[in-house]
Image (tube, rainbow, N blue to C red; front, side):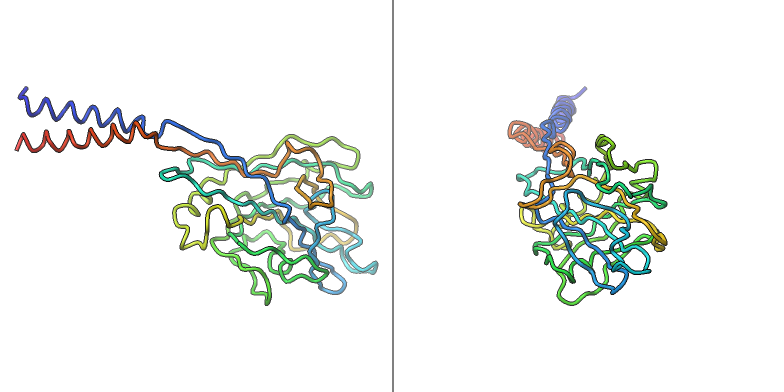
Length: 288
């Protein structure tokens, strides 16, 4: 074997070792939901869309007294979660991401097992606080029921600006067997993968209107039926942050959370990579 080829092989071996170690340091970042969380509600008797933060749990489904006390079908209710996604260090990248949440017992003794599933959506990012009111543009903008995957948010004057893609990240995240009746025990965390969605935000922040460290990821749990039950209360109840005057349901350990696993290049391996690249170039030149 010639000396030039030997040098080149050594340089390539060094490069392989350096690249293998380049992403050796992993970090886990847990992002808790914000006190800006709210419930988007729909009153079936007058068509209004209240936004509320006054509940100890987030609820996904339909509630009998959201019909004005009349003969209308129960009104809809669904939690909106906001997660402030962090800025990453130079060279740091997301390798995996999950959404996790704990289910809790329903607060109503009259609530019955839902006849529908619950879908999990990522709706994009925002830097604007939602407006909490009896008829909120933000609640109307984000409220949705239906089994067909939503592809765009309705245009609602005065609603907060949300940018980036809309994706049903988990179809049938909840199913009727997961309902916890009043008096039941909280369930372990339900976890689903959201890696591709989160990676897309970080890979194209400008295109998605995403400012790491400032923007909130907006997520929603909603019933997957377009037809409310004719009567009664049917819903899933979940842990959430609540607000400063509301005691959150469950314990701090049952979410909701977005958990990022990232890799950070080690300075030493960056140097090894650079040295190996230089060695490759030198070997190639000597062979020429």
